[in-house]
Image (cartoon, rainbow, N blue to C red; front, top):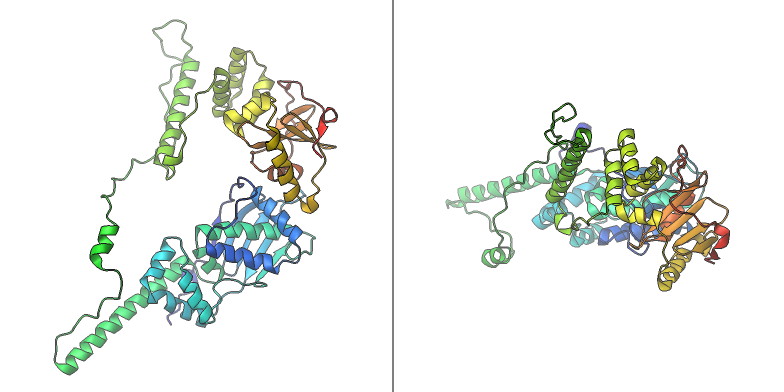
Length: 466
């Protein structure tokens, strides 16, 4: 076998931190190979409670960038202290002999290569590998988790969170599994191409030798068995591809400078007009980026905003002191109120702003369902004691609160100097939000103390959630 030098190998790949998931019931892996990874993790664990907490960490976005290398995956995982822990899961690499066997199996069928390039792991390939004694998928006790935390659990909740996040990566790209076993995508595809070329050359040489021996014209080797060309072509008939879309500009454009221009219309504020022109360009750039995106068909049309909502949006898009002062003055709000509103907007737009400013009474079945889900997802079924008032659950003894929005999401809040501040992105699962809220990933807001837009009810006046 021709070996590649180390410099040609893909030593590692780094994946950006995945966003928090929506809800606690969605599976971490939908592909069969991703589920096999989780089965290996869960069957080797000595503590189901740590696995449950690891799932909550992973769903809540506690796992940072994941670096997948030959034989290991590593990431920083935010735990109870300010500094994240370093978690690693190791997987035994295949030997050169095992790789030879596996590559032969892949190269034997063009469908195997096509499936891998389409983001699929052929089940037949995995079965053939098992029969040949090549452990492509990890089994129980094949995963070796490590963590810098003081917990000696196997695995601890931080390493478990990393393993659950790796399952999400495996769902997206089966080459992640192959890299964990020791070979990167580029090296594998180069080796498969070399083997296919060598196979074709050997078949051509054999045909030429037979022709020279028998004195007959060389005959091309028979095509591999498969579907007839006519029905296959008819079943996959497609329209010609569309031309390439226009290239998205790197940044929005800006209109002409008007501050020093002579405007024909009296009463027009040049600075305000400049700002509105720049904002229109920014919004157009955002809409164009969405139109050129892969999920454009799934994008909902923009919702009309009220005057106040649009003012907050404008303040978020152009966060300068001059803009904040002018907008708050024109809207009849204090700069502190506008600052608080912009913090809410950054975590969910108009829906998040509504959660900040308006209390409402959710349907009782919805609250009961979320109470049960919170108990079920919390270790030992004992979440912190909460006091409820309308759509707000306040943690007793902590400056922490969950607010249910009319969009069905729970929003985290923390109190600083008597004011409740939006503290992070929302989630449909209250356990995910509460876990992230009680183990903050950054210091609480503290510099400014604007007046809260409405009187907040102290926790002691609410009814207990449990």
